[in-house]
Amino acid sequence: MTSDVTIDSGAARRTGRVGLASAGLSLGVLLSVLDQTVVATALPEIAADVGGLGSIGWVATAYLLASTATGALYGRVSDRFGRRATYLAAVGLFTVASALCALAGGLGQLIAFRALQGIGAGGLFVLPSIALSELFSADRRGRVQGYLGGIFALGSVGGPLVGGLLTDRLGWRWIFYINVPLGVLAVLLTATTLRLPAAARRPRLDLPGSALVVAAVIALMLAVEWGGREYAWGSATILSLLAAAVVLFAAFVWWERRTADPVLPLRLLAGPVLRVAVPATVLLGALLYGSVFFLPTYFQHAYGMSPTAAGFALVPFVFAFVLASGASGRLAGTLGRHKPFIVAGAVVMTAGIALLSVLGGGTSYGPVAAGIVVLGLGVGLIMQLLVTVAQNAVPPADLAATTSLVMSTRGLGTALGVAFFGTLLNRELDANVPVADAIPHVFAWAVPVALLLFLLTVVMPERKADVPRPERAA
Image 1 (cartoon, helix red, strand yellow):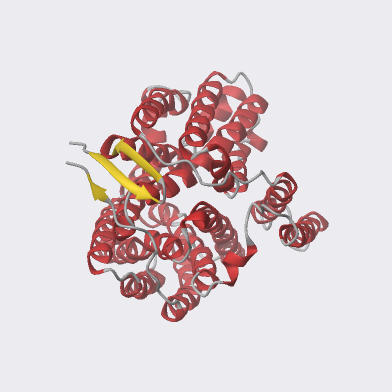
Image 2 (image 1 turned 90 degrees about the vertical axis):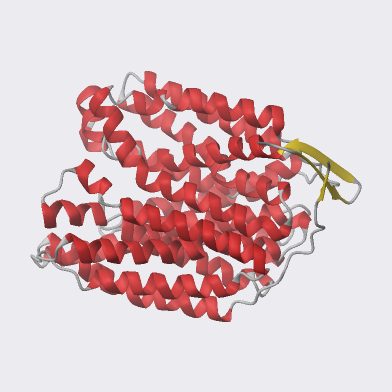
């Protein structure tokens, strides 16, 4: 059931069928997250069909690079052209690129179309969080972001399952074909129901700043993707990429301090909340993917599971994540306090990682399931509320830039986490430690990182948003 909602925002007013609009935005989030991991189980079939086994990993990497690099830009682009128009353009690009991926005749074409798909996905990942925070009042942001967290969990863990099922039954091209009707549905829902007020001022696009931050992110992402795998961490290639990332980020900061309409207003990072929330988000992303990424491998080696069965073994994590994310968002909105749930999430998450760190090859599935349930509860409590407290700490004019910053740094954190913990795992394997014992050792290294996240949540101040409450029409 939907209702018409009218919300005052200065002189602007917006009316829209909120339920359907929210569904259209949420569908975009699900599509973008699913396609991060949906190709994982299909890569052997793709390689057998289009060739290029040595470069097949770029089917996943091209998407991740493009979506992470462009995510930071969509906030300012939507300030300039409007949330709905920008979202429709992003989901349209994603849908067209999905069809092109399905029709690709060679590996080079598929990689190029995956990069194009990733550019659209950057908007699908960021823009719904911005639009939903404006569509609902500040006291309901936690609840809405909690629901988005549940969708994120379903997409992250469900990607390999969906990819495996579609590949086995219909062929790998259907992991892309399936996006087309869903993308069209997202377009129809948002185009016909989403109504948000036009910005009082439309900033100019910061093209130099955008180019610098995209180049810096790509250099950093390539370094963490290749480091310890394609090239040694001390190789000239990795060191050059890291140096390029530092120089480009420094140039970006220099430019942003001088331009009138920066893509990322650096004054945001001087605020007491974002000064803590941003590094906390990086650590959270690193811990989330640095743990969940290796669990299916553990299941396969410890219990002899197939890839699909290993994906199903993560179902307890998803249920716990969705439950905690929805409950924490709802309770935080009702009580008007977010920090207690964020701190509790960090504590529970640390406990979950600690439980997983004491496992071994002979451990039965019961203790493992308990550990991943605790981990899921912790991540669900904290993940989307970090977005909410960041949004509540800034005025409405900075909402889009702040949301883009938080979501993009989480994406960077995920890449850094997989790279860092992957390096630790490789060291264990080089020492001839069995995989089922090596992965828990990696979790042991994650415990101090989780404790650092806990300390950040303790010192993080909390501030309610200065946003008017909605007036509901009859």
